[in-house]
Amino acid sequence: MTDVAILQSRLTEAEDAYHLLMTGAKEVSVNIGGYGAVTYQSTDTAKLEKYIAHLKFDIQRKQGGVRRKPIYVEF
Image (cartoon, rainbow, N blue to C red; front, side, top):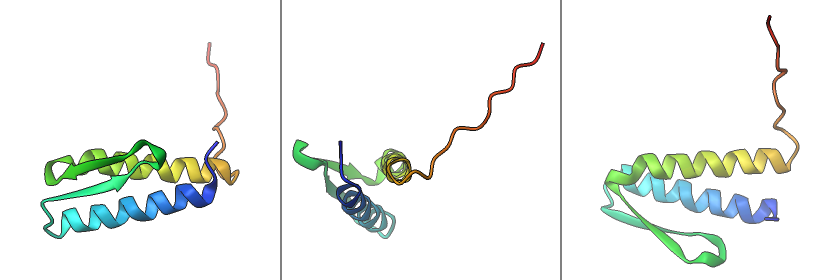
């Protein structure tokens, strides 16, 4: 399991990389824990946005802030 502090630092790094891409950097690298790094180019902003959303979701889930909506069955 990944600690919230580690997820938060990854989120900060990913958001900084996204900012650099959006302000004109041609490519940026983001560390992925102990698995190395991923390089994103300006054409990969959608992938980076998805990664940021995933990190935010994981942080919320670990802090107990994500709940399922009720499931209603209709006949």
